[in-house]
Length: 117
Image 1 (tube, one colour):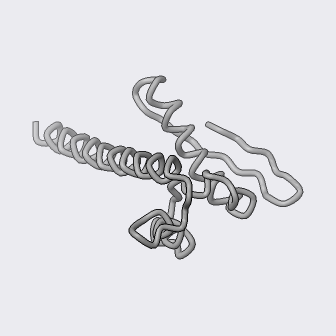
Image 2 (image 1 turned 135 degrees about the horizontal axis):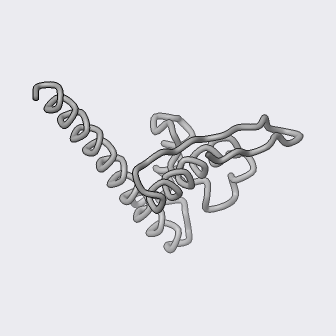
């Protein structure tokens, strides 16, 4: 569990992560905490590269506008390092989400098989 105390401008919040190995659990907790922080503190992070960190809501209007700023010939981000780093991060994030989905499906299949046996 990661707990963040309240500040003058934001309420306290926490996240919880559980997994079967500590090495995976602390990485999941850190990822969840970063996602939450980037969404809560979006105004404070608006001038930093963290503004591109994946949020919980991918259909969020501001998030989609930020992603368009990284793409195509109308690209608004001048630093190519940030563009490529964010492309890599988003690819890794999508890969992680796919693995989590697959893992949940395998667990559900295993539980169903146990019930049948």
